[in-house]
Amino acid sequence: MHDNLDGSEAKETFSCSLDGTEYVIDLNKTNAEKLRTALRPLVAAALTEKTSSRRVRSRRRGNAKVRAWARENGIKVAARGTISAEALERYNAAH
Image 1 (tube, rainbow, N blue to C red):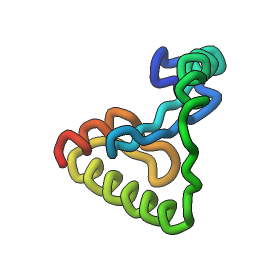
Image 2 (tube, helix red, strand yellow):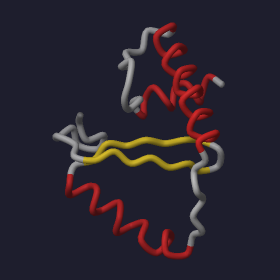
Image 3 (spheres, one colour):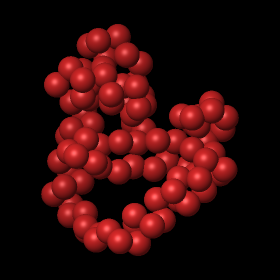
Image 4 (cartoon, helix red, strand yellow):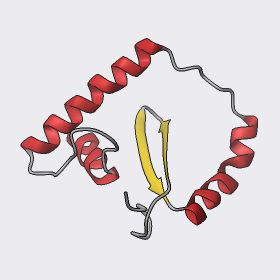
């Protein structure tokens, strides 16, 4: 797994949703801490939403659609795990 910012070895994967778009990013230890620091004031003010099993199943079905679309469009994606930010961006731009 590689850090999406600098290409180094990533240690963590982060996911979030903003304005109806799901985002996933792999980061090394330093970049993960930068993200946490930047988001700390916003997270402190935010409300949490518990993820229901129904929502998880829905997200998995969505990921399957993204993977199928990516393969049909010549974009390499793994059968499991993180879908690259590039693949997600291209999928979202096409839909």
